[in-house]
Each structure stands twice: as C-alpha cells, then as structure tokens.
Image 1 (cartoon, rainbow, N blue to C red):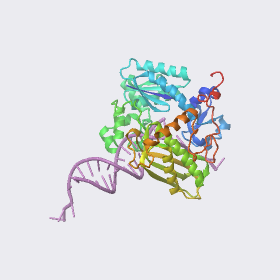
Image 2 (cartoon, chains in turn orange, yellow, blue):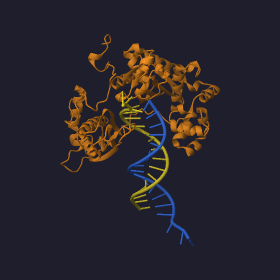
Image 3 (cartoon, rainbow, N blue to C red):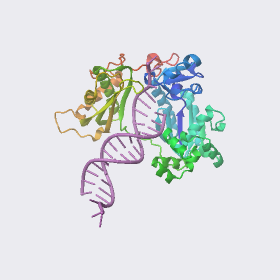
Image 4 (spheres, rainbow, N blue to C red):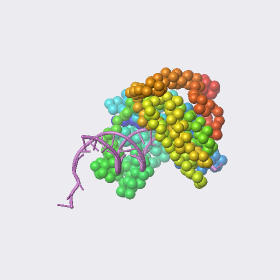
Length: 431
DNA sequence: TCTGGGGTCCTAGGACCC
DNA sequence: TCTGGGGTCCTAGGACCC
C-alpha cells in the first residue's frame, strides 16, 4: 500500500502562506526570466491559463481579471518543502521525496492508513498553511492516480464522488466503483503517459484508464516497451515499483539559464560560463562526486527569425575532478571552441556528465597536476565559507559578483520577500 | 518586445571482442 | 550457391516527469 502526498498548486500556495491577500485570487508563479507560468492557482486555471504558457500571452489578464503574477522564489519554496516533507515523514517508515512538492510513503502494514492520511493532511495545514491532497493505492501508479482524483474531486465537484476529494483511497472501492473511476479518467492522466504516448494509445482505441488496464501486459511490451508493460501491471494492482527512500547521487548536473538580454560578446559569455560552471561544481561537491566530462552550450532563441546558432562542446578532464577551477577552465575552453561572433545568444549552460563518487577516484599519476585529492581541502574551505557567509563570498575572479546586475541576469521583476531565509525580511508578527 | 530549468529511463544501432 | 554466434559497451535520440 502506497501513499502519495502532493502540495496543491505548490508554488502559489507557498506565496499565499505569507501573502494571505492572494487567497481566492487568480495567481501564477513565473519561471526564470519571468518567462512562463509554472504554477497556477485554481482561480488562474479557471481563467483558462495552461501550464507553461508564456507570460506575454496572458499578461492582459492582469487588467482584465485581476491576475497576480509573481517571479519564482525558489529559496522560499525549498524551505516550505522541507517543512512539509518533515511532517510527511511521520506517516510511515519509508519516504521517497519525489519532487519539491510530492512524496511517496510506504504505508504497508499500517493500521488505518486512510485515517492517518486525513490527520496528516490536517497537520500540514495547521503547521504550515499548505494545502495538500493524498492518494492511496496498492501500487505507486495507482496512488498517483488516486492523488489526481483527490484533487479533481475537490476542484470540480461532480467530476468524481465527493468522498474522494482531498484524500482518496482507491483500494476501498468496490470493483464496480473502481471500474467506473477508471472509465471516467483519461488515459493521459496516468503517470508515465505523456502526450505522444497518449496519442498512440488513442489510435489503438485506448481512451481511458480502464482501456489501458485491460491491455495484455505482453502485448504492451511488444507494441511499446517494458515501460508500458510496467504501467499496465501497476494499474492491475501488481507492484513493480518501490518507494525509493535512499537518495542516489545525480548522474548528471546542470546549470543552464536564459538571459535577460541577448548576449553576443565572448567576454560576457566567459563570465556566464564561469558563473554556471562554478554553480555546477558546487552541486557536484555537495553530493561528494567528481566529473570527467564538461559540456557547454550556447544558443540563439528558437522562437526568433534571423540567424540561428546552437552549438555545444564536450571537454574531457584528464582526471575526474570536483575542482571549480578545472571545471571552469574546461567549460571556457569548450566555449572558445564553439563561439562565433555576430549572434544574439539568449541561453547558455554547463552540464557535468560522467559523474562518479569522489571516494573511488584515483589521483593522477602525473605529480605536477592538481588532482581531485589535492584540491579537496581548498574546495571544502571555499564551500564552508560560502555556506557560512553567503553564496559568492569566495569565488573565482572570472565569476560574476553576486547581486550585481548583468546584461545577462534574468529578469525577476515580481519577486516576493525572502520570508524564511533573511532575518530582516521575516514578516512582522512572526519574528 | 516577451516563450523555464533540471532531471530520469529506455531503445536502437554501431563498434568491438572472442 | 554458401559468408557465425553470442556477448558487452557506448552513444544519440526520444519520451517522460515535475
């Protein structure tokens, strides 16, 4: 038996905790660069605002419908997520934090998981003011589906039986009621079925979740892949996936951004790449890994007419490393190899691949080179100082100063306060 | 004018090995 | 005429997730 607990409209809900005047109003949170809507309140969804729609296409709703748009404040969301996750951990012994706003919990063998889920939901609300929904089912895929139904039943009364709202336990339904729910749910709502696969399934006459569950697993594998077979089996109630409570190190670490303004000078790009490379190296060291491949890319806007440019370069390190200096050096040499003047570039990124644990890395035989081992004390001193005194306190000379506007700095014109991470911005009355 | 960021898994096909 | 068989590793590309 699995539970999936999920924050409703999570980023918007985090903002509403500290700005209660935003409740009952249409609100969206915008992505980096105030580019598109990545979280929408129910009222915003009711205005027909779709996920990831560009801001300029809905901007008129500010005037017309009182829409409020905010720049993404990930420091705040991460903090609120930690609070929510620590409460969810009390539900059962195995918790998998699946994303910033979602968590699976293994509730096998627990007495009355339904009652406990209701209590948990109430506690999260009482302690954090975050609204959540809980889905319960015999597999992760069914728990996901139950969670979707719990939200739909709350948002659109009449779409599903009212008792399924907020907390939905699919395992308590009679076979007939269960079948009705599956028939009422579009196949595209199943976890793992995206737009492409949904289209392919519909072409085969599979329109709702019941149709998909009827599919022969062997046929699903033959026509699609083991992936589809697993989904079908999970819909049958046969668990193929477990709660993964051990956090595996990332196999790939990226730092990529769109720019606030187009950039075309190499000097600016070098600063960008040094800054992104440093961030990626910090993430790499935080999980105690080293990398041996540094990919850098630059590109023009895919939406604009005019001369396009998109190139990437992979630089291999002689010896796996987590040293900011080596990673930045590799990224800049890659950048120089692909750079061409005369293009309005709007995005760049540094991606670290071929990642392995630092503990397994062997020092290079060349005694003159800086190996992962010899540079580790310097890097960890740098990380300690930056943790203690703030990001960018100690950095490479080529990296942009923190909080200094650059041509390429992202737009964040609607940023809310740092309510949980800055002592001088804690709301009055809460301090 | 204005269009996000960071990940994962699976498969097919080529190179290579004995 | 006829041109092995079985395996691994790696990579690019496609699809998905939030």
